[in-house]
Length: 443
Ligand SMILES: Nc1nc2c(ncn2[C@@H]2O[C@H](COP(=O)(O)OP(=O)(O)OP(=O)(O)O)[C@@H](O)[C@H]2O)c(=O)[nH]1
Ligand SMILES: [Mg+2]
Image (cartoon, rainbow, N blue to C red):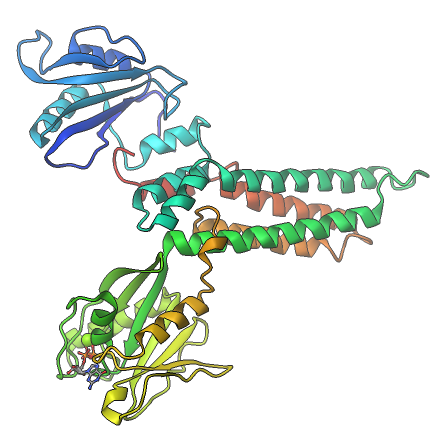
């Protein structure tokens, strides 16, 4: 871990730019002494201290006046001594102030380093750290609400309760291994089987709830693909309700990937419009097609577009859910319609005339099984993967329980470890690095 606990970090925590105030945060063992050198005046704790900030040791050059609050460890966000400086919101003042803080011994904070320190000092666990990010970036009422829940620990509590039950169950099984020949049956095997089944049921339920939380928190990645000129960009514009992409009757108009977000009943759709797929000699278009194929790989849902005049199939994708969209129904005088079968999702629309768009939206919600009321807390894909992994280990524990209980105990141990990855009780430095560096500076 590159976080050295003895360093004191400083960064602007409010957005850069012009504003009423700007908040600069300092955290670490030197936070107070550095801040007192900046003000040349003592700073009593937990008080709104009105002070002058100086550029030099002689207190001749004034940077600004500010409200300064000192939060002594461990009662601060990071768990370390923390000082918050509320200066006037001018980027020049902020720059001068930070420059002076760095001169006095503070280091430049990495993105997410304040939250990382809060995690390392056990002020929050990993799901709560992620919830802070989700809270800041929530784009709908519902996603805001569930991020608040996770920040307050709703998700962590459920994980910890399950983890506790797993530990107990494993201990019971191991107890039976230690006394195999005892007359007293230390464990009632049927009770243990029952307990394991109940755990499996609970984890299934939690995975389902977490998946809803993940869908609401992260949104879903939708990629629009198809041959040139079928109306992909027209559909993007129609969904967004604005003329975002260039539309033209010339085949091969779009080359770059166009990413846009929209909300569908509180659900964030990250939509990508792509270059039309065809054999091309044009180098730029070839690159566009390469990028389109790359985007397909990370999609949660593919919208394959074709036309009512000559409907085509797209069978290259076998893994990601797909909706075939038959566009330009107006040209054939056909009504918009849901043409889905058991095997295929298919909607006929006219993107230009805006016909059938609601059918498409319904279909999207159906495919991602969007049930916002079932989302109780925010969650990340990472957590859902570990929950699934944990569930798989529990399932493995069931068949061996009677004959080889030691194998069951081992599977339950692995299931327990998967859960600990979610809250960060076991975590490697490189994973932490990935999680926290996605935060913004000053958070
Ligand atoms: N009649 C009719 N025309 C449409 C419809 N949707 C799109 N078009 C027209 O089809 C042409 C191509 O539309 P685009 O949205 O640029 O198609 P695209 O699939 O993005 O094409 P590329 O970017 O070249 O791959 C334009 O002239 C649109 O006005 C539709 O529903 N009905
Ligand atoms: Mg286009």
